[in-house]
Length: 273
Ligand SMILES: Nc1ncnc2c1ncn2[C@@H]1O[C@H](COP(=O)(O)OP(=O)(O)OP(=O)(O)O)[C@@H](O)[C@H]1O
Ligand SMILES: [Mg+2]
Image (cartoon, rainbow, N blue to C red; front, side, top):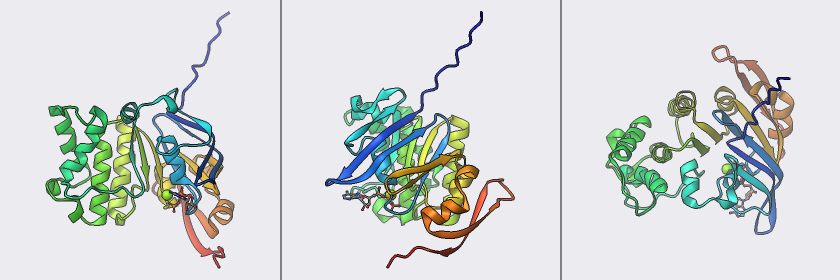
């Protein structure tokens, strides 16, 4: 008898049953997430629901009290900082730029994360740094102090740092913050290009639900520290979800260009008082 066994696919990142707290206040409550290889997964949810906390957990920036995080089949608890830097690069929500650092110096840090602080950069690293800066459109500012850049330019310099790290997984917490609509789309198209052409695995956090719909294979919705639903954009983004999770009355139509859900928000039904 010919028995074919389906290969078991390991997720790029799998976090299960996570409880995580700050100062004993529990934020994540048995939250779990699967990030598939070669896909774009986007976390959405209202302010304060735990999206950044979740990303900190599965990128080893925050200890958790319960649960497990597996990256490429290995428990993250056993990872050294260097090993993790070879697997994934991270753009935090509000990265702090050290003073007196040029764009080139900042982006170089992506390479040092990979080779270690005392490591030597090779010609290919220097080429990678220049290419990363070029990809985000900052070549003309390569020697400028990061402090002297506008908010959007600074954000793009940080994205270049994550690209220069040259990992297969990118974790981006609100990569389009501070960017105008043209640069938002440019950065999301760049991320999509890295995913499609270089098969990079991307996990990001976005607030713009139409961008989430357009650029994601998979959307994970967090609310009050729990994953409430996940799946393909058309399955996840519903009028009920917008009402129940985001407190918004909305209509959803089909984007005539991309065929993805397009949300028209009409009215807030949140009661913040
Ligand atoms: N360092 C911290 N110390 C104490 N509480 C924190 C800390 N960081 C976050 N929190 C709290 O944890 C909760 C979740 O925060 P988190 O940053 O994960 O939210 P978020 O979903 O990313 O929100 P946003 O969309 O505003 O970025 C919030 O109530 C926040 O006030
Ligand atoms: Mg956040």
